[in-house]
Image (cartoon, rainbow, N blue to C red; front, top):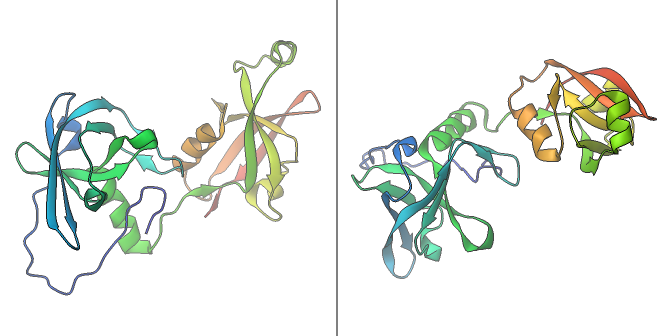
Length: 225
């Protein structure tokens, strides 16, 4: 199971079951009809009809999982339907449902599910880049921005460093403020998560950080978690 995308692999002994046709979540637009399917223990099948209320690009879950497309649905999601199939108007499965913030209904696209499943089947887990630091976003004073010629108004302060972690071995210290990773600005923890998700484990990353009011440059080899 991958908690960051809420995707899990189940093994079935019956190989003669029918297989649903997979659709493309990228083809969905605002206003398109969709249906959420579920099955409860007591009342059996359930279905609710609705529309796509918002569609956007790739995003990250609260746990850092990469989701290929943002799809918010306007429909009544029954408890038995959470994690069930979302089908389009042609009956193709375009993803599965999950609960979003403040009672919203979101879709994990089929492309995301298949990508995660491939890794879970092959490795039993999802390989993700790892630095080994606790972080929080901090505001950078204008005087410091001007002095160091920094383009961002925020950085990511290191509030903890795990012993013998990639960050520890690379020389990151408590209180360092990360401003770029491979010249990519980072202003909050999600920026760091997004960067690590796009990198290869074992790759060396150039880190620029503020330390004692000066800009320092470090090299860190990305670990795996």
